[in-house]
Length: 603
Image (cartoon, rainbow, N blue to C red; front, side, top):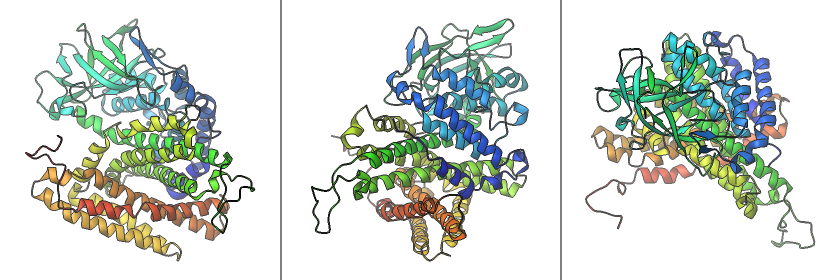
């Protein structure tokens, strides 16, 4: 295990100096908080993570969750995460005061959740899903549901899940068959099965509240006929909790995140599973997807945190491991010299800089999305709310995808820094490599996110969201252009913005002609293309802020700290930004090779 799993200075720098949390704190909704109180909360979470999460990270992988006698047995720290997390407000933090929350900005909450994820990514999901399911009840449930369930969920006494996926449907939610039959009372009879339910059961949970998508008997087919139900494992009744015919069928044994249980649940095996409708009938998918932005930010945040922890471990190793010698001016090595630390070798530095460029920009991306979310929620100005809603919608697919996909590349490079030791279980990089792989699948695969970006978000409101995002990028280009040493990089990013317009000008006619399969056939390439441009923007913004701090003589962080941000921006622009040229070439190639035709190619 490494000594450290997070760069807390970079976290606070991005939170305050780059994305300006203090500006968000000026909104009336957040007026009870200031930087000092947020810092205290962040520091308390770091101390909690140091003590209760990080020391158990490897142990939870070696002793995974497993199914036995109708329940799932998990590591004892799951109980600590839920109970202590509830006491600390880690579940309630972003909720309204009226719901028992702290009304903390999403930016601040995301920062603390990022620390938890980096310390031990097997644990925070239990609390995070409880938060998400409680949020659905608080937003759309009636007073009875709120009173019955939300307080105990926020306290960490009861867990929560979101149950969407079914064995025969996978990601195609229009094909779900879980059934809800009305009764003459206030509940429905629920029957069906759900799979891949994270945090679906533990021996420590007195109760778990499942938010279940189901089809009311006689409802329309497709997604329009899906409703949302509260289905507790044990239903509260006079005298205590009554078993609600929710069966834990199995626990999936996984490649990574082995301490975070993933369950197969059965509902209504004895025809006594009761569910309570949330909101209106047939609006379940709408309700669930109103909360999906938060879930997708959470996945991106988790991947960014795993990437950060892996980077810290590989950086520590590179600073301690002597191997080989530097080349002399004659291009030879002197065997009589002491061995060099591997961090002195250019290829190792390249891999470390690639990690740094990915994981720090991923953190910036996640906090930017949280900023947009905060302003959208807190502002009283309708025009401002509409603007930040569109900006959030535009970047959400990238927030979910880039940290997941590029984060896996970063961890892979970290493993390579360790060489043969990286492949051994005595060292932690192989665990991070396994753990991060699920991120590209959670909450909508990369393919789904890519189709969402190109198929929905680009054309949303006649391209208004894209126009707003381009304006944000241009504002950074303008600011960077004021500094002679940053101006060339601003020019490079401006050129790539124009290239994105060329790519869209080529692709859009396919959509306009109704040839959507052709239009979306290379959506994954477009996702990678746009992600690189957005990440380059975030790096240019970070470098510009660092340059301003250096010129002001700001001593909040060291001169080396600020210079490192500028250097990493230059690295990303040299090694990653040029990849957009090859992606654009593929996107604008007239040959179509992945759309199925009458001629079979898999022979």
